[in-house]
Amino acid sequence: SSGINAEYGGWAPFDGTNGQQLLGYMDTAFLLSYAIFIFACGSIADNISLRYFLTGGMIGTGVTMCLMGMAGYWKMHSLAYFVIMQVLIGGFQATGWPAVVALIGNWVGKGSRGLIMGIWNSHTSVGNILGGVVAGSEAGSLDTWGLSFILPAIVIGSLGIVVFLFLPTTPQAVGLPAPSQSSKEEDEENLIGSFQASINPAMGAADSDEEDDQDPNEIPAISFFTALKLPGVVEFSIALFFAKLVCYTFLFCLPNYVHSIKIGNVTYPPDKSADIASFYDIGGIVGSIICGLLADRTNCNAIVCVVFQLVSVPLLYLYYTQGGASMVAQLCWMTLLGFFSNGPYALITTAVSADLGTSESIRGSAQALATVSAIIDGTGSIGATIGPYLTSVIINDKTGPDTYQNVFYLLMASAFVAALCLLRLMVKEIQRLRIRRIRRETLTASIQVDPRRTSVRGADRHID
Image 1 (cartoon, rainbow, N blue to C red):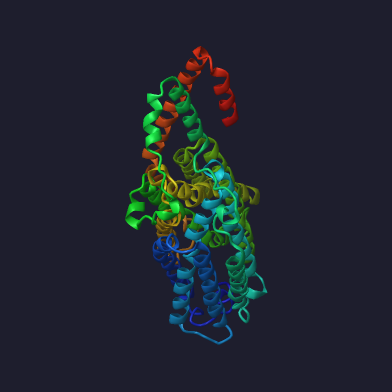
Image 2: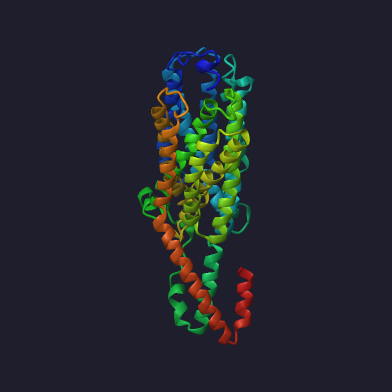
């Protein structure tokens, strides 16, 4: 929007005193459209080819973004036109997340899903950084602001054609085996069960009778409400609502905040403020990877998310109170904040969604990944819509050093509530860790008296 707001000379109808307010309505229209459409997109994606679905969404996004950019060359000044385009862009972009999370979940097993998806999810932060560069370049000027929409439209539309021609949706489609949907901990539990069954066959008989011999491709996709009842879906959805509220408030408002304060007694212009704000995304990239790695190593998604969210609460306060002391302090606190606040957001929207979509309670239903991902990310997107809106209401054209004080209080409260939402799941994970430790101790004691302990220890070493 840099090329059409009042600060850059103005483009009607955004050149008046209420220009920033109208641009805020545009952002709200896009985010609200995305949040609404994504719930339906998940169910649709689970019932048709992901390749076709993703291709249609990418090409549709390219077309609508191109129409948005052409308004600059058609001399279009209708607010209704801009709002309609934002709604359409949000609707088409809603097709992307459920589809790509399902695709990655099809290719990546549970044991390494957190790390790989954490690395993969860094594309969102990289996109934020590149988007800021495009908006601040020549394409962001008044005469050519439309290029900031048209150029990405050409890229995403072209990639949509590439996806249609070359994307394999599953490993089986190219003759590769399906990835394991069990974690290292679950493999270890299976080892313990096998050893106990070798001692007492009756102990393992019940489990063997529960194997599902049905072909997963013959089982229809689960419904929206069935997915909503899966263990953990509601808790992680609500937690993401508050986590995404924090992240998207920073995404939309951080450059303005940096511009509004003095850093080492220096006030930076909007373009430099946007460059400074990119360090939040840099911290988010690293945080997403580390958070995913910790989740893989511990198999405790809720514990990892709670710890990261709780740490982000005092960091928000420290960034607000100490970030303006110097440029070094600003960048350090901002990077740390991005690390701890983006980590849980990335983990929940990717690896957690995929884990819940392939959980034991629906094992055998091959079409659940996109639906679960849509429920979780859609709920989070509602928070992403509300956060920037509440920020604009709180600020309400205020000026002065305390303008953003209540905004940071809102963000601290949101991060804390996000952690509270996962407390029940965290307690269950702690109990599971305790049971796991007891079973390992029992296994160790059994091995010491069993003559077949060598082969069991060898298998244990293989898993560890």
